Length: 224
Image 1: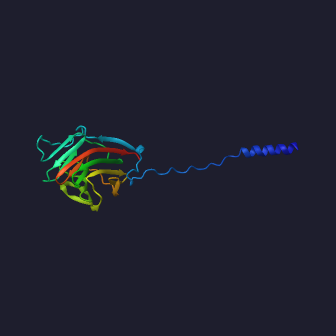
Image 2: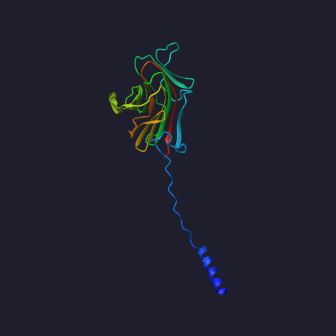
Image 3: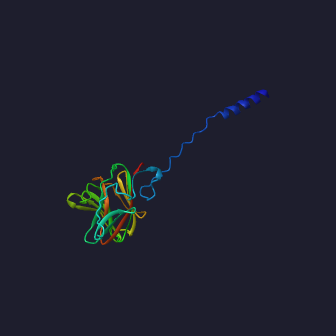
């Protein structure tokens, strides 16, 4: 009887000492979705530039004369404001930014305008002449994405795409790996190949008679 009890004890101990089966861990669920406006978590963003227009430290183009309201560009009360008398287009730019556009990045700007005819330039070598740059342009319910070469030659990557443009707008330009993603008011309006940078200048483009106010420009590096 003692022998039987001893054998049972040994069996219990041996069973308890058996190696536990290792269950492989499930791969982490992908949490980055570049084609969704909020698809990049904050932990993957590093803010590089936060332009709130409380000063002109970033050397935006300015021209303003008191009591002259024909055309002006000025920084005032936290806005980059300008007025166009309708005689032409207005280019409003800064050469004061410097960030590595070969890395993944995101540019976001918020604006208010009295018309729906406005645009945004980036990756330009010189916005005072608006050549060698890219332009995202909105005009009464449509969008153009323009590649501007030397000599002002323009190639339309996208032309007259139907979008819901508004006088109050948030524009977001996102570069991830080898692709561009453009958003207007939280809606994806373009997804396509990344085009190499031509320079560091960025700026605004305004058409038609009226006022335009840029609220902010934020540029972030995306660590994905």
